[in-house]
Image 1 (tube, rainbow, N blue to C red):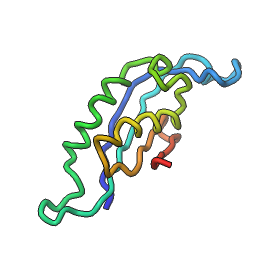
Image 2: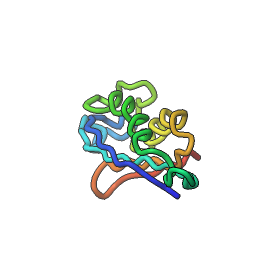
Image 3: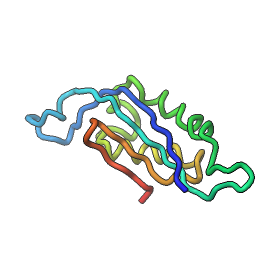
Length: 118
């Protein structure tokens, strides 16, 4: 069984490894949509995979670290592509959510990536 919560971030970034003429090499912002997926068996007593409140609690420090920030200034995000952002989020959520199975980062309504820890 797979459960998920959807979260939102507002952040700015630039992708410094792109050519100067590429629009993403300039400072710009995104309204990121992030899905945090947790997989596991249904607890026979409680009837759930895990408490959504546990997912939300694990997310809170991520939100504090990233929301309304310039991502390039955050350690580990000097090239803050959506792919690197998904890995960064995964690495910080996994200790708190052992059943973490996927992180999805949408940078627009139509473009994003998913990371499953490999």
